[in-house]
Length: 216
Image (cartoon, rainbow, N blue to C red; front, side):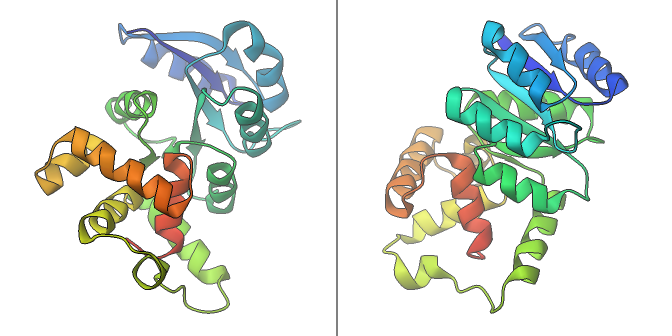
């Protein structure tokens, strides 16, 4: 397995530091660096990476707009947002536009490597400390308390509700399987059913649904 990675960040030190860390992994190949969204779009055609580590706040074109355009043209590329605690509203927009999740810039190198592998394998990435801010942001903007529409409007089984809750907490399939004492294959089947019932087409939208409907 050779995971092709692109790093998009307006800080040169961040770009080069991440590249140095990631290339210590035998299965990682940092194929390109870009300093903003426009630069990324100009460079992506020749390389088509598997994973893009995308900063949010950048000049010329920010990470949200770039994520939207990338997912429209290259839907198979997985975009993982690099964020700070101040970016909660941007995070929501990025998820809506197809990002597979988000990670904090100050996380450990081990967690970063794990997050990239999880994203490559189709799991959403949501650190609990950032998820709590997103939940608070959504709740603060709501005019009324958010109803738990999963319980009230949808015919979900108890197990589907359990899995939706854990997806909302940012758990990978492996973590969900371990928590519920079931196989990863069984988790994948339940998540496919949730996609169908909730009419979403990827894991990031399923995660956002769980947060918005207070399933966690």
